[in-house]
Each structure stands twice: as C-alpha cells, then as structure tokens.
Amino acid sequence: MIQRIQTFFLVVVALITGVLPFFLNLWIDVNGKEIYAENELWLSIAFYASAVLAVISIFMYKNRQNQFVVNRLNMILNLFLLGFFVYRSLSLSGEAVVSEKGIGMLIPVFSIVFLVLANRAIKKDEDLVKSVDRLR
Image (cartoon, rainbow, N blue to C red):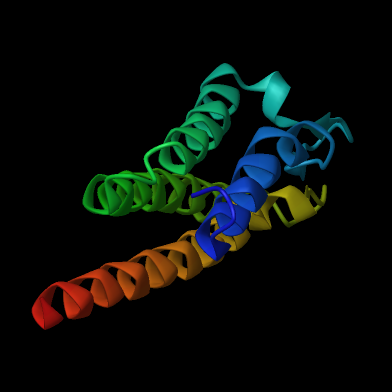
C-alpha cells in the first residue's frame, strides 16, 4: 500500500540519505576543504546503502514483519554512521587551526527519527490486522 504514512517516512529517509550528503558538507578539514560524502568512498556507499534499504522497505508493504526488520537494519547502519561522525567530530583538531563540523553530520539523526516513525506506523498496522483477525 503506497498511500500509508510509513511510505512517506521511508521516502523522506531515502531522499535524506540518498541526496543530501552529496550537497551538504559533512565537515571542513584543516586546509579549509569541504568534505562531502562523495569524497569518502565508504561514506557514500553507506549513505547509498541506507537509501536503498529504505526503498526496499517501501516495496515490502505486503510483509510488514520483514519491512520492520529492514528498517531496523537501516537504523543500525545509521547508528554506525552517527558513531563515526561523533568520533570524527571529537577527533577534529580544535586548537590553533580550527576545523569545522558540517551540517551533514546530522543526516543520520534525522534518518533514524524518520525510521522510528515508520516502524511505529508499521507496528500500528500490524496491531490493527491482528485485532481484525481476532474478530473472525
């Protein structure tokens, strides 16, 4: 069912993780060069994987349990990305030459929030289906 609210949340996650990391800088290094996801191969792979998992989850609407699991895997991937960004932001030098953190470091946070909202909607649908089955 494409018209469900979790589909909207998953489309937002796919857009956030598939497009924004390549337009918003993740951090600025010591030399003043802006670092985007395309500058780091494994970061771009991780962001693309998150977007692909969100799209896969959209088309798994007939099997809500598997959709829920794929969203959980996507959350774990985004938690790893968030952990890397926290580590990276804490290890950026801040003494004589100041490195700046970019707004792109918040992308996994927003992605996790929308994935949690999608999982809550999936759980609500599953509970509704189970309650209807009890009436039969």
